[in-house]
Each structure stands twice: as structure tokens, then as C-alpha cells.
Length: 352
Image 1: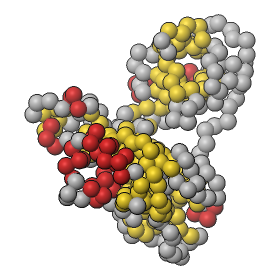
Image 2: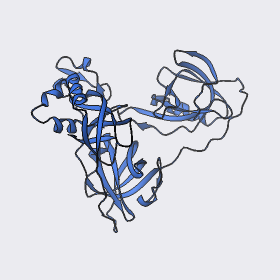
Image 3: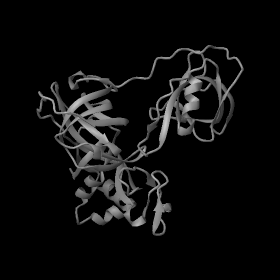
Image 4: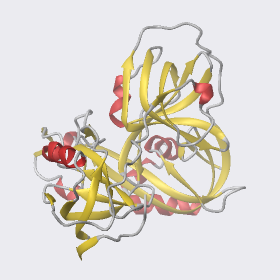
């Protein structure tokens, strides 16, 4: 995707009118926070294109029909925003309008390759990073309890496991709503799983589009042990302790600012469930920058469980005071951390 804006009729405070051709409208999907959305690609010059994300499911049919035409369209009140990988993408909401235009553009609609599909693979085929795959595997065992960590996209639940097929074993991180749908010892068809690389080792992670379908037992599963933990000494140079408040409906991952937690009851704007404020799930985790033997600027996430186990009963009151906990961590400074298959998440924290 390109990183510069070119075909903008108007640009005011990130809101824009854009002339373009529309391509590759996806099916409706559900985000980790339970919001319906679809995505597409817009072509703004002969060779320049952007990913479009639309959080207005009622417009899906309109966009699908527009993509099937060779005529240009105009988006009004669309918004450019950095994506997770830093590239610009176009965000569409209910205030955005799509209009067919008679105006001719100085370039023709260019046929684009369809979006990358999740392809059925064996675990031994996964040798590169960012492979999007479908797997038929057995979930051998979980390697930790469900843990909530605070990522750049908000509070997320994660649970790590070992999966296997006849070609070998891999570790995988299950994120968000998919965690309750998988259990140890069962066989699954996992779609839209992405490969990651940590210290030259390939691990796996679910995505917001991952589905887990239980399948019949198959033979020849290679149930060998794999190394799942890594320990190293670090020096924490900066830290941000974050407390989040999440919807008590476990199938919803919406979070709330503390200012909304007033009174006896509240309604979640995502799942529409009314609940007692006292039942809102509170969690505390931390983002830290540290020095290691090989990296002077390593970033890690420290889970709530790791913080609580480190503090013990003696210092547990620090969990209620973010500023005091940050001071304590920076004063101690030298730690030994243990990570699982995701080397960015600390599951055990000890004084070095």
C-alpha cells in the first residue's frame, strides 16, 4: 500500500473527499470488540492504492455493487488513519457517503490481485514470517492460564498452547474471543492463523479473522516436546503501568475509561449488555523498555499474573497504585524475566 495521499479533492482535519476506483470488497467480518466491518481496496492513481476499512455494515451491498463497476466513485467524509503496520488506510463510518461520479479520471481501473487467502498448510511448511494459513491440528496442551495484557490496541486476553500435526509441533498464541472455543486434547481446523518469528523460531498467532472448527480425530500426530520458555536477565529503563476495565461479558472485549464507571449499573455500547459496575473486570499490566545482552531497547509486556506473583502478599498493595508500582520497578531495575512462545510477553518476573 502507498503511504502518500494524492487524489484528494478536499482535506480538512483528516476528513477527505476522494475520487477513486473501488476493488475487492470483503465479506462482513467481526472485530475483536464485536463490531461488524468489511474492508476493500481503493485505487487513487494508476499505481497507488490504499486499504479501506468500513465500520458501517449497512453499506456493504452498496460498496459491493460499486466495486463491480468500471466507473469511478467519490468518498465524502472519509478519514485517513495509520494502520497497525504504519501505512495509511482509509476509514469509513456512518458519516461517510459513497457516490457514483461521471467525471473521468486520468487513469483506468486496474485489475488487482485478490487479497491473500488462508491456505491449508502443515506445520513443517511454516518457515517464514507473516504466512497466513489454515491448519488441521491437535491442541496438545496449554502452557499458561488466560492472561490479560495491555497492547497498543487496548487490553487483550491471551493464552498460549502447543499444537501438533503429523509433521511436527508449534507454539501458538490464542487471542481474545477464540480462547473459550478451544480445549486441550481436541482437534481443530484453524483458519487465518499468522506465523511470527522470535529469535529465529517460528511461532503462530490467531488473528481477528481466525475461526476454530472442531474436527474428527486423525492419526499420526507428532507429540514431541518443544521448548516453550525463555529466560534472560534485563534492566528495565522505563515502564508504564496500565489499569484497564473490561466488559464482564466474556464474549465481549470492550474496555471502558474509568470515568464511565459511575453509579450501580452501566450498559456496554459494544455488546449492549447491562451489568453491575462492581462486576466490571479490572486488570493491571505494564509496558516496559529494557536492556538485554543483545538489545538495548527491547519492549516487553508484563502480565498481571507476573506482576502479582513478583510482588507477593508483602507488596501486593502496589497493584492499587500505578505510580508507586512504577517507582518500585525502576528502583529495583535488575530483573530476570521468563517469556513463552511470544517473546514480547513476560509471564514470570523475578529480581535478578
